[in-house]
Image 1 (cartoon, rainbow, N blue to C red):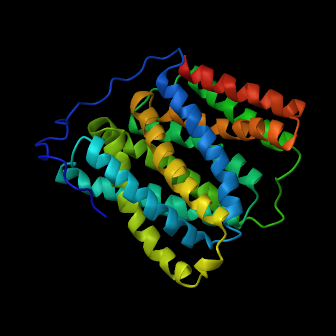
Image 2: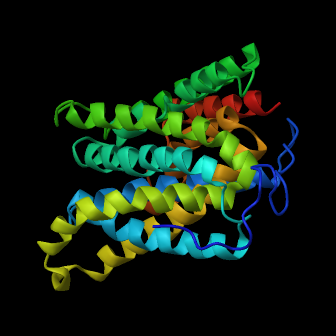
Length: 314
C-alpha cells in the first residue's frame, strides 16, 4: 500500500509543508500530555476488547480486518493533513520500520495475548520504557538524566504493584510462549519508536504514521487472509464487528497519531512512560462499572506511575 502524493515531493527531507513541530518544554500539563492520557485510555480498553474478540476471530484474521480499515483511514487522513510524500532516500527506512512496528510487533502482540493472561501482558509491556530509554540513549536522541531513570523505575514498579496487587489475571498456567512473544514484541516496539523519531521530526506524526502503518499492513493482511477464508463471517456477532471497528479506528489510527505526536513533541522516552498508565485507566473504569474496589497496593502503584511520569516530564 502506498500513499497518494499530495503535492510535489520535497527536494530534501527538511523541506516539509509546515516544518517540524517545536518540542514542548518540560513541566506543565500540555495538549500533548492530554492526548497521551487519552491514548492510554484507548489502549487500556483495547486490551480487553482484543481478548474478547479473540474468542470469535483467529488472531491473524482479526489483525487482517483491523489493519485493512486502519491503514485505509490513516492514508486518507495523511492525504488531507500530511506533509506530503517522503523523499526516495527515506523509503527503505520507512519500509523497515513499517515491517518492524506494524507487522512483526503486531503478530507477536496478538499471538502473545492469545497465549497468556492480560495481567502478564501488562507487566511485560510495562518494561517498554526501559528499552526505549536505552535505545534512545544509544542513538544519541535523548540524554537520560538520573531523574528520568528514577522516573522510569517508579513507573515500572508502580505498574507491577497495580497488576499484581489485584491478585488475579497473572500466572503462568498457559506456559511461557505468550510471555516470550509479548516480550519480543515490546522490544520491537521500543526499537520502532526510537527508529521513527528522525522521520517523525522530518515529516510529522501523520505522514510517518501513515507510511509505516500502510507498509506494515500489507503482510499483515496477506497472512491473515487464510484465516478469514476459513471463518463463517455470518456467524460473527455484532459485538465482534464492533471490536474490529474500535480496535482499528481508535486503537490504531487515533492512538498511533497521539503516540507519534508525543514522540515528536516530548521525545521517545517520555512518551513511552505513558504506556504504563494503561492499567490505572482500566482500574478506574472497573471501579464504578464492575464494582472492583482498588486494593492498597494498586493505589500505591498508581501513585508510583503518576510519580514516574511527573519525574520524566519536569
